[in-house]
Image (cartoon, rainbow over all chains, first blue to last red; front, top):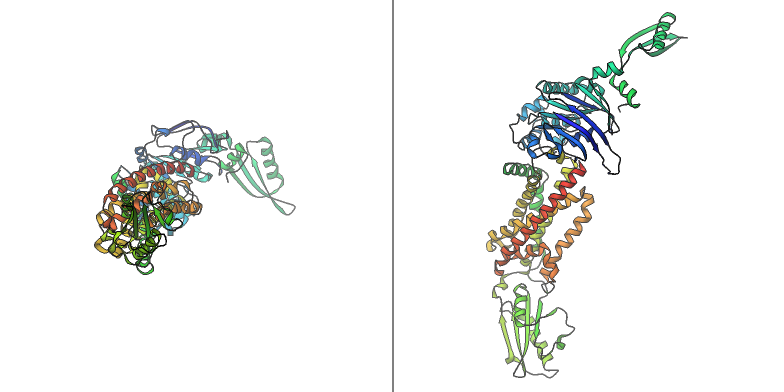
Amino acid sequence: MINVKDLKFSYRHDGTYQVDGISFEVKEGETLGFLGPNGAGKSTVQKILIGLLPMQEGEAIVDGVAVKDYNSKFFNKIGVSFEFPNAYKKLSALENMEYYASLFDVPTQDPRMLLKLVGLEDAVDKKVGDFSKGMLQRFVMARSMLNKPEVWFLDEPLSGLDPQTSQNIKNVIKQEKETGTTIFLTTHDMHVAEELCDRVAFIESGKIIVIDSPRNLKLKYGEKVVNIEYKESGKTKTEKLALGNEKDADRVSEILKTKEVETVHSGEATLEDIFIELTGRGLK
Amino acid sequence: MFKRLINNFKKDWLRGYRHFYLLITIATALLFSAFLLFVLPDDYSSPGLYQYVAPEIGESMFEGEEGITFVDSKDEIKEMMKDDANSYGVAIELIDNAPVVTIYTQSNAEGEFGQTIKMMLSRALSSGEEIDYTERYESVVLHEEFKDVKYKETFLPVLIVMDSAMIGMFLLSVMLFTEKDHKMHTAYMVSPGGLTEHLLSKSMVMLVLSLISGTIMTLIIRGFDANFLYLYIILIPSAFFGGGLGLFLGSIFKNVQKSMLGLIFLMIGLMLPTVSYMFPSFSPMWIKFIPTYQMIYGVRAAVIPLYGFDDVWRNAVIVLAEGIVLFGISRFLYQRALYKNS
């Protein structure tokens, strides 16, 4: 559904690239997450794919159409939920939705139903300018679903949402996924990536470091670890030790035999741990 | 495209309405009308004087006189006075070795000014000797109908053009800046909506506001003496041009603050033809290339039908052509700016 080959982009046209030779593929019905810190190049890739930034170098094809050949009809097939919640502030949610729906050449979904889906049923007639950030985020998501897109682009879809709303939105995304929608998602939240994506691409300094399913990444790069809390000289100490490491395994055994152990938790490396391991920096 | 254009128009109209654009337009129209009704006098300006002196006589007798425009023929006097309701003309020829003076007025009332002219000429022509030239004077009334036009009414076209071109320009650029600020253009760019209808709808909003404003002012000042059909024929392209200027500003500047200097320069440039309109003797060729020149004279022909309607059609076509070119340029610049601001 999405094919990208050796994509490069430079904002300054000075030989430095903010997107530096990226290649990837998203299959029909698949959810691919771009995981990386702010400024890594995630949103730039997305902007190129949705035509907001011009194609400079490389190739990109979305739903059989080369990015540089986009025409207005193409936009009947995609939906974009922006991180910056853009809407006409003086219009109500419903007025905004009805206006946006009128731009499409294909049948659109009922705006009220979509607003209800994202929990904005009580704010249908409220001016968008009076919305909170979370409400705006949900509104742009609902708007992006109006044309029932075949390819759905989500830019930081859960940014700034409270846990309850986040969960609701995640459920909406999962529902869409189940209907076969191809989803391209950018996030710096490892939990979002892990829960929603079939595959994630770690992106850093404009390059894809690795791309695979969360499970495979963990199997390949993550180690099983144990967190042990024990008392020593009246003080509580904590150690995080990898089970796959012989030295750490010996240390676990030593602590269990010689120390007053308070708690033992086994766990696996998170995507963030793996990201740090591979890139040397965190996701924030 | 038409359906989308109408939907864009509905949306932009609603936005404009909720940003009080309609209220601002009506208030401005009423304010301008009040200015004409209560501030400007019925007759105020010092009249223009056009003079032709036959070469055999020479021009030296009026050298140094201020406010006199020397022309090359009697016909030229008539041509100049055609566009200047508040003016006189004097032609001095030599017939049978004696000067013959023709005084041109815009109405029967020569009044004090005519008497003053006669006195001045008598003195000048007789080189100090008191000679009665009464019989060698001729008075020609050029435009009897101009006596019904008050000075304040001749100011109306300027204010209508100011409102349609200037306020349209300002409001439309503000509309674009607000969209940029809210990044609404990004949502629009990923929809099947085209840029032309996106921008054209805003011009249409300004067009409607301009027609409302022009109608209010004309009704208050001229009542039904104006020709409203012709007024709309010239106002539509004028408002379209004004909207084009707003698009232009909205395309090359990022926000209102940064556009202020450009806006002021544009306004000054666009107001220059007003000087020529109020003082017709000042009409260099270059000033006629400023679109507001065509607009003012076109609107004048519509609201003061005494001038004939030729200007309306010709000027409407010229301004429309300029508006289309400006819209095309602005559209190109706006599209380029969208990529930069995405």
